[in-house]
Length: 368
Image (cartoon, rainbow, N blue to C red; front, side, top):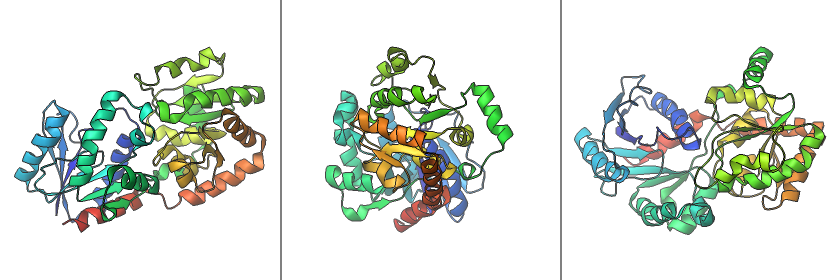
């Protein structure tokens, strides 16, 4: 079978979807060695980073318009290359693909909480995503939460939807050496005791309430807050200065985006991960923290509660008091932290990229 993969999104910021794509594909190629993979790129500089076997071939389609790239350039190239199944690890497929198609739904927050998206994005999502859902032969939902929302908001036929959770790299499951952790701590100038936030800052992350809750309980206990990620300049620009506005300048440490291979050591240095999001679909930091044995405070709803499965302190994300109480419980109870770390490791044991790839390939093979 010849499988085409749409990779226009790779130059984006190194958040969840790009991490997902770069982690999934090598495993997919490894277990799918009987197939041929055609990788469609938009930019000339990108091909080659995944080309490690003879079954891969790069095709550059230098069309600047995203819509024309998706809807014209890709289907023309897919036909020329004899693609049997076209797969996009992110939203969108050609509506006139000329072959079977599948795409990954990483969440539908713009339906669940539309106020948290820009108007132009809401328009695009409301017009195009239902069309992609209607035309696709299969949709991979990254969680049961996403499956339920796709049934509710996109009116997708249940048989089209396949739930496949994401995973964590094996590096998260291996305790790094004290020397490696100390080197990272020194290079990043990290405090000795801190709680951690990982990810992009935008409204579903609930960062304002997180900061207010942290202010109430963190500094008084001697714990700093380390923020590893980026900011949506359109929707969360004001949250960049929250530390200063709340009088926490010396307590909040912003690292920006880190190389993914540095995160295991960061999780192992942290006392806990804070992720009281208003909405998550299948948040990679939850899986990674569990795999690394890092205790978690997270929301009691949607994808965070689904993934944590009782291996975290769950809080009401709409209540600053509830979040603060959850953080305080974690910081004050060493036995609780040990129990959560152990339960998290067990919970994350089956959440591997190999399993994600096997299930994904099974969906693609079923379309041929």
